[in-house]
Length: 340
Image 1 (cartoon, one colour):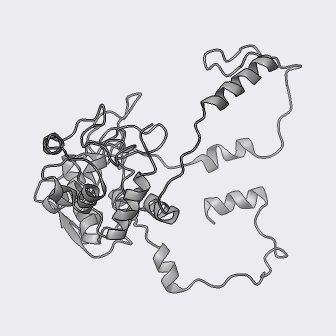
Image 2 (image 1 turned 135 degrees about the horizontal axis):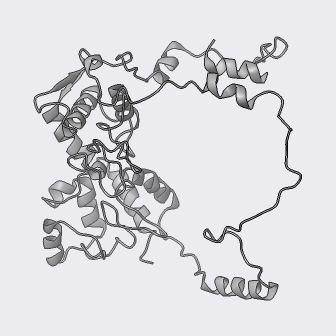
């Protein structure tokens, strides 16, 4: 019996014969439905699809689909995770947990990339691309040479540096008996009293008069602006919000939007290019800005379709939106975020 079932049996929540009668709901899952969910990969390589990828190919794919968040060398961008480095940091108070320094199994890397990446466009990579990306991540961690090829045939042979850095979860045997059964209820204190106030966190509010509260509420209501009504098709805006999921890894919009690896996009429609304060644009884009580039329907359409072709040398690594309707929808969505 598995540990989970042991716990459930101990807690008395397993179904009794009376509770296990068929309810007449649902149906048996089809083999193809089960196969669609059965995507996980085991440390020994079980579950891997046929395929292979080398470091150099991985570098190209990584640059186009991963580098905008994780950096060209897997070093991480802004607050996006570092995938390389961190060696000899696990004993520190603030360890750098990367694929090379921390992850115990290569299958975890392959499985995560395959099922969850790229951000906003998960499961768009084919197996060979995943093998190549994982090979490049290993290379970025100085674990393989630049001629390394990863495939389903030799996958299980690769051992991660921190494979022995984990312990077996023995809480079922060592801790579970301590917090089940009858409570102790012996040698209890006669009374309990509060000895400290949470002054540092400032979570113990001082009392305020009702008159003061009314004034604060009234002033806040005066400061709230009337919501602006968008003049675009709401269905188109909703579609644009969905497509913008591919952009959120680098760009923010709305209240509190900040620059990330890409500039915030509030007020981008109708704005001169390269005009967001605090963001370091590429030299090619600034050259276009000096020539009078303004982001409007025409220019945004051209840029979103193929950023690196529209402005050669741009830092934006996203390949572009392939469908005209997606571009139109994203532009409509962006028009609903004027400058604050």
